[in-house]
Amino acid sequence: MADKPAPPALDAEGFLIEPNDWTERIAVELARSEGIVLGDDHWDAIRFMRRYYEEHRIAADARFVIGHLAQRLGPAAHKRLFELFPYGCPGQACKIGGTTRPRAWSTG
Image 1 (cartoon, helix red, strand yellow):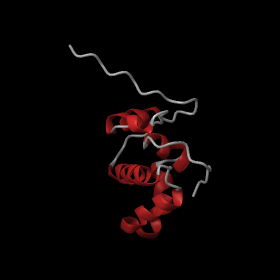
Image 2 (tube, rainbow, N blue to C red):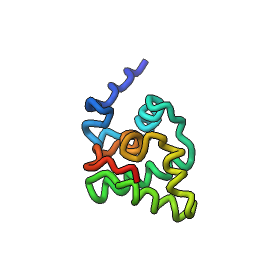
Image 3 (cartoon, rainbow, N blue to C red):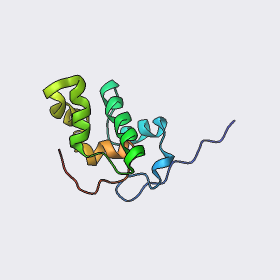
Image 4 (cartoon, one colour):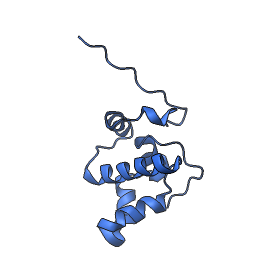
């Protein structure tokens, strides 16, 4: 029987210490710990945030995530982001997306 991989190291606030350790499997576990079951809209936001992080090396501000979601959802994007992640973009989406802690805790 194969050994189960060690869980990734998290800081005191629940963010991955090493964002490169992130996988979609880890995202599912982090979401579960936040009481969230990931659906298509969650994955859309999370995958955008990962691409943004990989390009800019900082967490995407909520306004960028909302802008991304607005391409598909229109004006409902802001409300939808907070339905998906009730404790906000920095409080849950960044954790689940495996990015670093945002520099500012803007709620969008």
